[in-house]
Image (cartoon, rainbow, N blue to C red; front, side, top):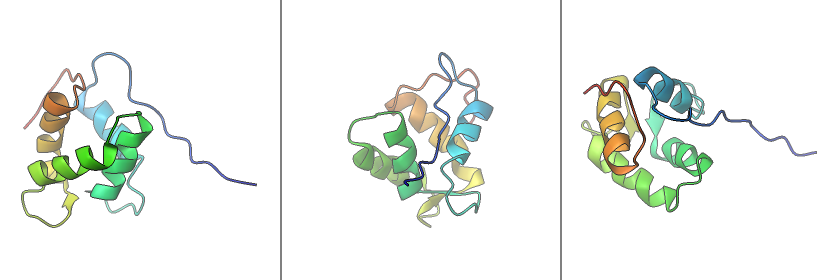
Length: 96
């Protein structure tokens, strides 16, 4: 018997920062509060974005300011901005 992990999709319409963060936290596989490229890729794949691996790589290059390979809490604002601009995710409260 195969076990499938259920992920709640992105809320329809405008997405608040809190909703985006809650959605993304579902993919934090190791529970460290950071999002790795692999975790981000899985999140993007869950919403059927084409070339999720490439978009995750580009997002990490753009938002990982300290180059530790993960999006930390202080870099989340940059990820929201990237998602809004490049992934066309609507957000009602865009913080940077």
